[in-house]
Image (cartoon, rainbow, N blue to C red; front, side):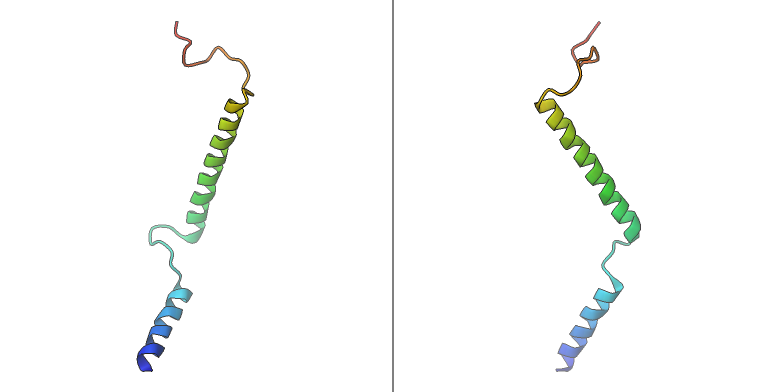
Length: 66
């Protein structure tokens, strides 16, 4: 019974203390996640535009070698 009470106190203490990484605060970590989502979303839009040929014609292509 005492072991169960001790384990439950340890578990509750870990919930209160949180499980954040030691290198970043919660705000910094959330900013990293948002920045990554923004980058991935931009890539998704770029792929969609490429699929539907929505990009404007340009002379700046990979094959424009002079």
